[in-house]
Image 1 (cartoon, helix red, strand yellow):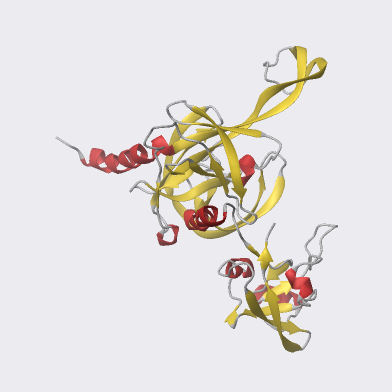
Image 2 (image 1 turned 60 degrees about the vertical axis):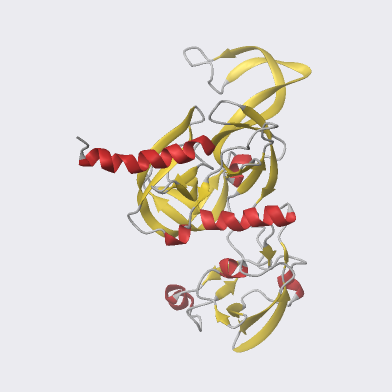
Length: 352
């Protein structure tokens, strides 16, 4: 007799069966100086980073320096992963599929805004193509919804599965991504309590129907299963760009800003509680307006407050609103400059 618990288990099991063949490991390799006579510190494992040896003059060898996850989105070999997994432009990338086949991978494009990248591998000749996932609709996700993560945990355990729920929607965080530890601001990401380990980056977050709804990207160290994933709808636009242009295309304005609210209005005695205040950030070399950018060409100034974009009130992130427009589009900004409003026309350019 089938028990209730078995029936409940069937849904995630079937979902994993649908997606697992499409999940891949991404291996990062570099040619580094060859070392002979390598010795570790006494009492430490051979993999200890503090090693002594003699560098062979002019000799280099190919070394695996990291890894992540990804998933096939087209039978012709298109793969989605995180930008921070394939950030190093001097590295070589190899994709390993679930049947342990290895393919050299080319980075087609890195999203200049989101932590998304698209890889390409060439499937075996004469075959029916590679198994591709089905993409879901991340805008329909709800709090408490069951989700599963699949990925190459710790770079050692491929197709590791973990289960949890959607814990939060549209979070904004700052995260250190990649080996360089550079801080990146992530907006609109999903929060989950699914166990996400190093090496899971770039792997799929799926619903119980076996549809990919997000890309796993970041965790909070020291917390109990607080992870973040990029909604798959963001990646859908990137895939459309790849097919149409061969690269990811994003509109570019060229300014730094802070999104205003009632708290900031009160704190800085501002005349409005909404909009985008054009201001530099905390970095020593920061500028509010990027030189030779569309914003500079249009005459936008530091401390301007952008109130509207094409007549629409700036009630969300300005960057997200700009993504609705194509490169080369001319948009009109309503700007509060000191005590008067001005209309500014800006021609958007492509973000490089």
